[in-house]
Length: 110
Image (cartoon, rainbow, N blue to C red):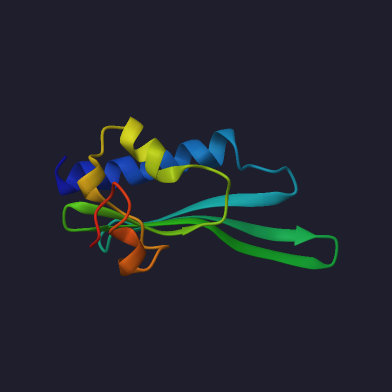
């Protein structure tokens, strides 16, 4: 996949999560896309009673020809979902793990 397609994949995957799985009634699920710089986030924003909710659930970055998984505060297997969308394992970096630990996965180290 080329870089443009990786941007589309990141947006599509997070939009699917926002619509199908992470869209509570009282909290707003927002998809934040900075296409120019390759940053994509699914966040929760709102209030639950007197408690402020602001959480980055998933953060993906597109850097060159790779998607970097920067944050995953869900039970979703984001990397596996990226694979299912056609992204090659060597195009996925599990940035949530240290570079030392990444070498032991089937994904890219950096």
